Length: 97
Image 1: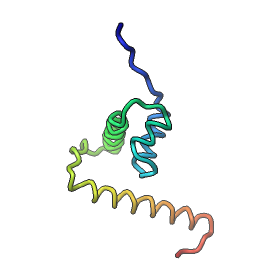
Image 2 (image 1 turned 90 degrees about the vertical axis):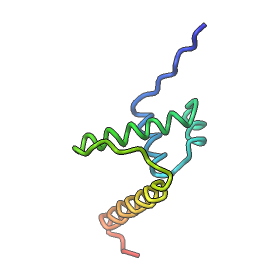
Image 3 (image 1 turned 45 degrees about the vertical axis):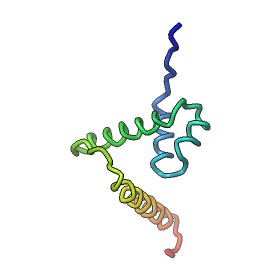
């Protein structure tokens, strides 16, 4: 008997991909937490998410990420998150470090 594929909601995919891209958790932890069969799915969703975001902004589809680009991308993600956190602190009236 054929096994049916499990379907995941768009909201769950978005939540998982955002946590993955922010570096909040790895694929193994996210799979366990959200009952996802394999980390490959999460990486696939992340690529779809990045492609859709680029297309929505009128940019060309992103090229596949090479190993040497991963560190650079991780650093850029950290800088982006740091910038967002600083803006939030400023909005809340906090002082700059």
